[in-house]
Length: 74
Image (cartoon, rainbow, N blue to C red; front, side, top):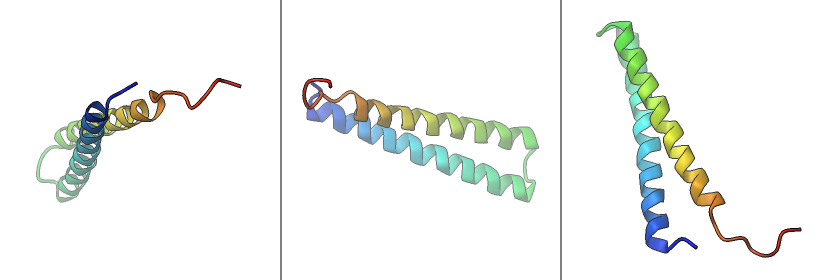
């Protein structure tokens, strides 16, 4: 069984990764609409944002599915 401190740490890391990923993708979208930097730069930023978002969702998935089972399997 996971201890509460470990679960809180995973939840915090998951939240940070999701928020950072979404923020990075939003900033890349705004910057690309203003055409301030080359398109490859915003594409790379959006890709990194997507990777961060996926990492955060993966951590949340682990928190949900690595709990101890409630009882015997059916």
